Image (cartoon, rainbow, N blue to C red; front, side, top):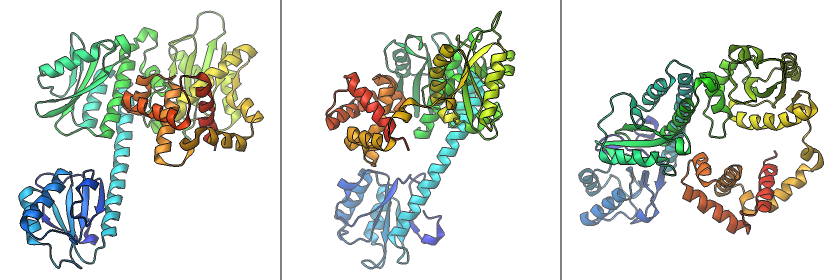
Length: 486
């Protein structure tokens, strides 16, 4: 805050080391504000009830430090013309940063400046997350992609990274000697049905461990470590790297494991999708950034085409031919006629295809489900179809306004426009989409499975429903979708 000259803040007691992070600013004139603090605050006070004797002042500062306050801002006048020397002395001796707020600067201006700084930090973190995701996606398409992903991860998080198997270790940057505790955690993560991730301290560093792959196939474990703690953005980047490494290690080349196919599977998967709009649009050649997902079955004579021939035919390098149904991410086209031309071209070449509606990279998993469902109808009708060519029977038969009213009635308190209600709706949607699988829902939400269990239990209590009953699950799924129809 001191770098914002308009505030006129003066540092009386500097931080003992690096500048402490501030989560928000709080004004309090309580003699003991500790019960109302959560840590990492910039506490602002004019000293209305500040104790006068040195022992009470020492207890006041000790309490703030114990509560995790990042810094104390003291406003001079109207109560005190100067910051009390006893407070300055205690902050200096105990290591609590102290700022003087001049009489011309209202506390609300300081709070506003903290909010602006936090918003700037949030934007920086989003930009860093996007840059890291794009770098990881490009690493998949490079030579030796596993090693390239590890190097990219180490650079993005400024850490060392290692991928261990039972017999070898691939690493980026120098990896310290693993302690017995870390070795035991690696063994636990390799155990079928064991934990998926763990955290440890080693040689003064924070170490994150994460199993790569699914179920009994999780023989590889990814480790990253550094002295500075890992934040939420760092963990999001780690999650993307784990997903990419899982695809790389489980998709041999003979089964369509080309870098382009791996990137296609990542984008069409059910897990969280990194911010790859710009990269995907560039790779596919979609200037407007809108894409479609094509599902196609070979109906021609002879062996099914493969390799570069598929990329040329679909008009995109993002093709996954690892199953009987070929999936591809193609440009949406400027008009519906452009998309229909893709279907016609595929049919003339011996393919029967379905094409999803337009979507961004973040919505490709939903578009993939559209194309998959539509392909069933395509095969029954024996003609290619595009999603926009079909009317949704429910949209035709159901009045949207009445459906929203019914959804709000079914969801009750979950339909409210509050942070708590939005969080519970998100948990319910993910849990239902994962068919009640606690581990997968927790992974998608970035939460512990016990947290998901608690939220689902709360939903059952609030709505008086039993989510073991498929009838209740179905009704709530439709309510969630119709509530968001706007």
